[in-house]
Length: 114
Image (cartoon, rainbow, N blue to C red; front, side):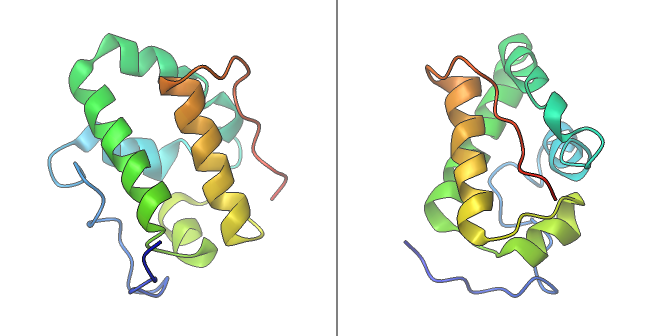
């Protein structure tokens, strides 16, 4: 696992694969993690099925975030608007999201209470 190289104040998500290329991916992270919307992330499975391009960007971005853990909860909250209590809680949720959208997870993930 890579050590974090950016603090929350420095992290803008631009290191995420596909960030520069996909407005849909940027909207996904900036909007879909909003506290009022986050439990609707199950819709991402359909979006990924509807667009191979978005599916690739989303899969690559989730893989990068899970493997590299480039930022802590504060930086993720600054980008997305959603607060996770710990880094492990954040990255466990991203694993569950990936497994639901692209794997065999049957139940969509429910975000922990902020």
